[in-house]
Image 1 (tube, rainbow, N blue to C red):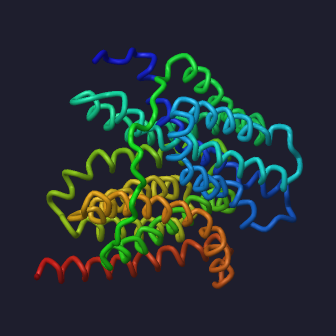
Image 2: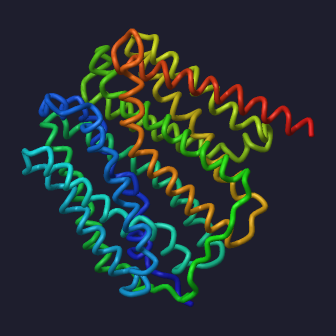
Image 3: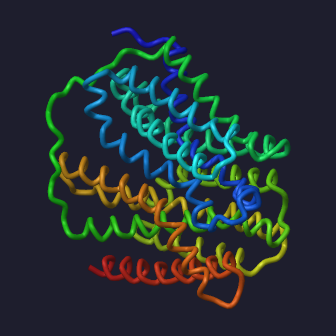
Length: 382
C-alpha cells in the first residue's frame, strides 16, 4: 500500500491545528462587553462557548453523514461552513445575529473535527500511524497557541479583525479539495452503547466539574486583565497562547509523572490549580498574574489525561466507545453551563463578580484536592 504524499498528510494534520478555533475570540470579551453594554455577562461569554454546544449536534450525526457522503465531503463542507459563519461577525452589528453565526460555526466544527483522528487511522498504518497520532495531540495545543498569538496582533486593529482568522478554514478547505483522500467508513455495524460501571459515572461527573472549572478561569481572565490593568487585549491573547503551550508541556510529561505519582497525579493537578487561582484572586501585579495564569493551565492539564486514562481502564471495547462518547459530551456541555454557573456564583461575595468567581473556583479546587487526596490514600492502602 502506497504512502500518501506530503500534501495529503499536511491536509489531514491541519484539522488538528484548528481544532480549538472556537476559543480565538476569548481575548476580546472586554471589547464585546463594551460594544454591547446592555448584554448580560453570561450572554457575552456564550459567544465563546455556544459553538461547542452546537458542535454536539453534528458530532452525533457524523457517523451517518460519513457513511452517506464520505469523510472527504463531510470535512470540506464543515470547513467551508465554519469559515463563512466564523467570519460573518466582521459584517454583523446585531448581537443576536452574531450569536446565530457562532452556533452555525459549531455545526461546521462538528463536521470536520472528528476526522482529525479518524483520517489518520484510515489512511496510515503501523509506526507512521502511531507517530502521526502523537503529532495530532501536539498540533492541537500548538494550533491554539498560534491562533491566539495572531488574535493578539489583529485585536490591535479592531476586535472585529479577530474574526478574520476564521478565513484560515477556507484555505484548509481548498487544501482538502486538492489533497484529502476520499475515505469512507467501511463498517456498517451500529454502534452499541454498553452499560458503564457506577465508578465511571463518578469519573464523568468529575470530568464535567473539571472542565467547568477551567472554563470559569478562561472566561474570567479577560475581565480580570481589564479590571486589574494586567495588560491590553494583545497581552491577554499572548497569555492565553502561553497557557496553551503550558498545556502542551503537561501533555508531553504526563506519562512520566504518572509513573511516579499514580493516583496522586490527579490530586497534584487540583492542588496546583487551587494555588495558582488563589494567586490570581489575590494579586494586583501583572507579571505575577500572567505567571499564575500560565501556571494554572500547565498544572491543571495533568487532570484531563488522567481522567481519560482512568475512565477507560479495564473496560471492554464497546464500553470504551461509550465512555469516550460520554466524556466528549461532558466536556461540551460544561462549556454551556460555565457562564451560567460562574456568573450566578459571582454575585455571591463581597468583591467584584470576577474576583468572587475566582474565589469560588479556588475553594472548589481546594475541596477537590482534599477529596482526591483522600481517595488516593485510601485506595493505595487497599
